[in-house]
Image (cartoon, rainbow, N blue to C red; front, side, top):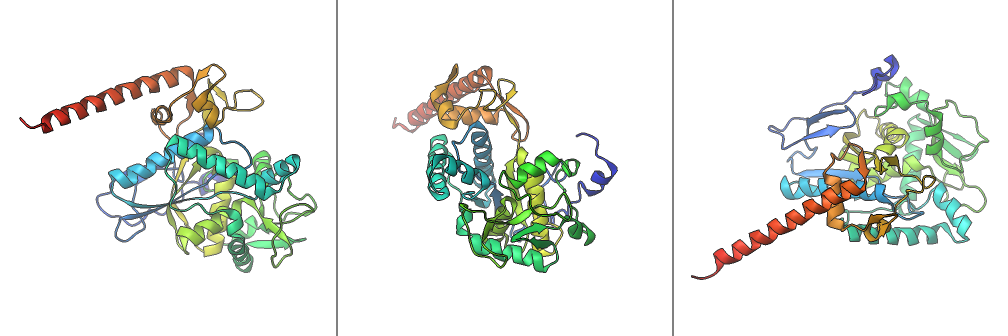
Length: 381
């Protein structure tokens, strides 16, 4: 880990360990502490585990980065449930209203809802093809707008947000002045203008004056042609970060912390750090997630996956074969991603595919031999 500044180090690692239930069934790498720690569920019986993973923004085809994240969390869920015996309540949202969706729908001349439903359906088809089980719940943002508005109202009434020309922004200075820590996951990235601008979206308003450069939108006043819902501040739509906070609260949070929050490493800042701030502001508490798990970056033949580099591979292309890479079986892809620690960088390459394919072949042969032996042993003399 790179050295942190004195200010960042003062924030990093502040984590309250859940009550011990000896002995722990496993230890988990916690992104909040950047260390492996004992895992203790919140549930007093120690049997129920709550897990929330940030789902897709449905405006385009799902790519290999999505495949890695959702396959890895599918494996984590199965280990928790099938190996360790936990009752796992797994929630994954669908972001179906967002700046990217609005821009893409305008380019195609269709409604944001029509675009979102099209790509949500294809995303679920991709997950089915990969053998990824459906989450316990998959809430859509558009189904929770009244709850989001209520969540924002509470943040305002608690003194952690302010309104400006129909939009509402999180007040980071007020948050810190009341003893909270902003930027727990990535304090070294707080103040990164590029990341903060990306988090606000392409359609972010430029007509308001932030009280602090770190402040971010909870509610956006809608512009002409954008989706809109009523609110106490006028017609508008949710900001990106607030969506997950409100859906966590109304599905598995219920005023308290959840066990595991997951997503890709690129979501750590600002998205997950802003989520933590919002949830603490809403609950007037100091910890709303006990363990964070982030999947590592995916590279294609040693390079970051990017459309500009022409190595952007969708899930369907990977299964069917593209750009000299042979199509892979879903089971082979699962093995390939499991060959690398889930939170480490992974390079999708010809060698990696061949190694996973060979391992898959040996596994199938071993299972086939085992079944033959069982049938032989069970046969009457």
